[in-house]
Image (cartoon, rainbow, N blue to C red; front, top):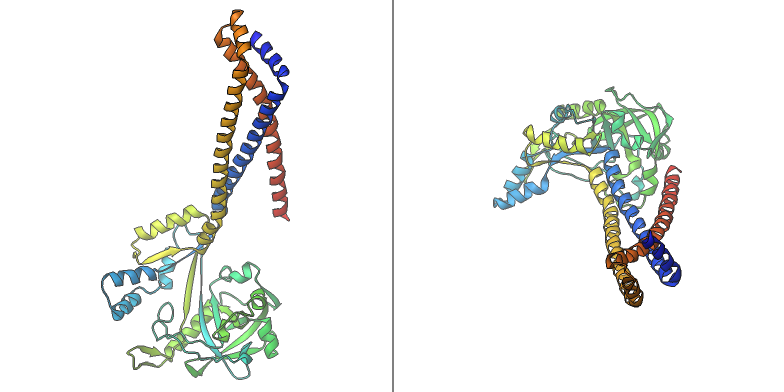
Length: 425
């Protein structure tokens, strides 16, 4: 009890020194709490982001690895071409087999073909000098399944397996403003066209449009307009460089995948195949560009599905990739940098604060040599004298830590609530 009484008296006698120590400790406590709050918030955001992330991924041939393997084996261009053709993108039946995995939440797919405008129809932006039949790749290289060559026509006609595959419509980029959605399960050639294309050609819901195969103009397909949609990408991307009108979002025509299959199957059945001067086999069949997307509930399911693909014998020259993961990892870089900065700041604050406090207390003890001598002379043991000095420091620092931590916690809470309010808005 005597130690505590003497410590309190000493604190009141040396107010200036103890106030200085209190201010230093308060600043250290407040800065440390803020640094810890920043680091914990960054770590929690990273963890929460992984848990809330819905991942969409695809399986595709690992082109870079194929090229490296062929180069390591000393292959020429012909061997590279053979290796690339041996590992085409997986077919729809193969993807459907993999989609039955317990880790896959949903699976959807779409295919696209490029067609030219028929009689009485013009592609939006065709007055800018675009030429429809812009050439393409040799037959057999044009999409999954190798149906014909890829020739740039006036329009991109995309068939969807389900409404969830129509990502532009599900995320709000595109909206139907007139008419209705076509039957996604039907094989009838009903379609949606853009508002710009409809206005450009004076088309309305219920009208029909005719498109032709760029490789065989006598091969025509008729579509019935079921709805007209607006696309926010059409205006924002108006200044982009395009090599064909089919690359303009305004010239995207949406149909069901069943309808697209009807077109590609008919085109393949009437196609003419021949070998050109370069030795490539060419076909007049329209070339389909196919893509399938697996949807996962979380990152763990995505990782386990990748392991399952390897266990099922999927070739090492195929890869499971996700733009969602890439975007998420890119978004983590600022958070990780912030966490590292907060950790470094915390270490610096504690180090500097400890040095300052040690120096102040060393000078404090030297200045109080006479007091120490008097206390020991009247019979107080050195251990109790040391405990008095410790008690003084603890009293001052405890009060400063409570005030500093309280202020820092209040500051962090206010900013957290403000951010939460801004996010809800």
